[in-house]
Image (cartoon, rainbow over all chains, first blue to last red; front, side, top):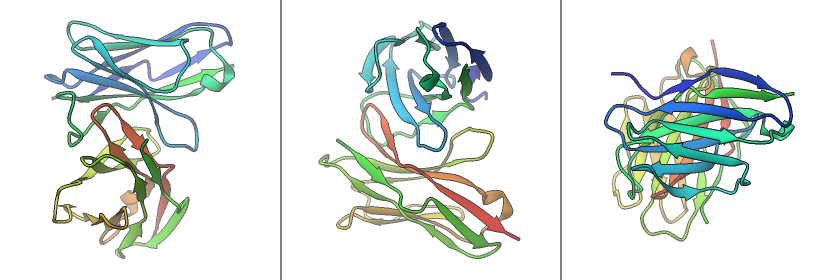
Length: 115
Length: 112
């Protein structure tokens, strides 16, 4: 079975541009989360989606948005890119929503570089 | 708010020896989960082990065990018989229904 897949693996953008990152969860998983990992730090929570609805949002500006599709795949969009948006963006999936004891399965991430 | 603290930025261990990676946490929740993930240079976060806040026994997964001391709010990872392939970044994380909160990580290097 395929794990969590993310595309693209690497991306280079310039300041002010827009970017879209994509994620496909493990088959059967209905919840997708996005995390930002700046070099040298632990991942920071951006969004969680479950059944196509936003169920949680971290402390990120409105330039960051996301959505989940009927097949449970997800997109993360970032507008007006800043240099500080350069990071590894990780997608994670889990079966359900609402329980603290369910582990998240992560993809390999998209490395975004903003020049 | 949940907080995870990992005080060891880097650790070295000799191959075949055991190593303990420290993790302390802070939360006002009664129900929570504690996780350890491994992140090799490829970037993927690999699940290692999980401990629930109500679990009375320490979790074990192969060479990994979690030393859970609830009163001290600590959840240390013990890796037995270290292997060269264990060299990676290790993150402790705490879960709520919505998200994982990660610590800053410990870079483990296994020496031959």
